[in-house]
Image (cartoon, rainbow, N blue to C red):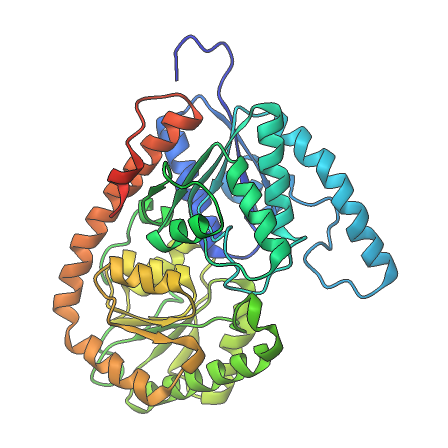
Length: 421
């Protein structure tokens, strides 16, 4: 940024932030840390799903993402449906007015261009379209920074997502699969870079660090081996599997519960992790079903807390994407209960691609077999993760430099082709 700028840089961050998803908030934290270090003069605020949480936790001014407060609750009454419909119109004006006040708006990471979980087109896809269209209308540069994307079957969602992406001034992705998905939807991705998840920019906890009084049992205090973190998820399949979502959830819950029970029978303390508020009933159901004091639930309030939990474990088995990121960032051998290509891509990029098991087929016996192989190779895998984490941090640093070149007019943009890991 030129020192001749008369007014401070005005930067907005946008997304389902502060809404209970620790991965989304971790991406926000990484961007805020970068902005405060590289652009301390910038005035930063957010338009987000949980404005009170974001304002309190990060100390920035916030605006509610949706005018209608019940936007993400199912509307079954006439009044609620009317409120949602009116909200869509009001949000056109609100979003445009907010965007117009900024020089640039950043959508920090997150899977904003994917439907790996159930999603309605007039929810966040509509909000993202309003953001990008307003940016193009008022000359505010909108950046989709290290975002996740995937194939979209639902036509209205696909159309909104494609146009949002086309209207953005800057786009980058956290993996090759995401860029390929947008290319297949007709988006010109020739100048779009591939980096890695923004959370890799956050500081890693010390290996086998102390998670506090409520943290996991220290290694070796129960049984012959130390604690295992198991990250659980309120998993019902993707947006195109709504007709069998309950069956998918039942199979996932039963398989995960049997796996946890088998670990307990071996004398292993198990620490259940969640990544979103909606995951808590799943963790509670597993605790009740297993009925052992060796199974506890982590009260992690942030992604940093989750990283500390995983750093204390001998190994991690996790479903939700950012639970995997936390474990890998902490350098702990990890087995993925994978529910989408993004998990497979992340594990492969970190050198653990062979340790993926499909979440839709959560077979306890097969999981135990792979888990024991994972633990048997622990020293080797920890060395691999140390090397891969160093490379991931460098990629995030290049991501921020290239983002600044486009959105803030600083430095020189690196060609996208050179950013593929």
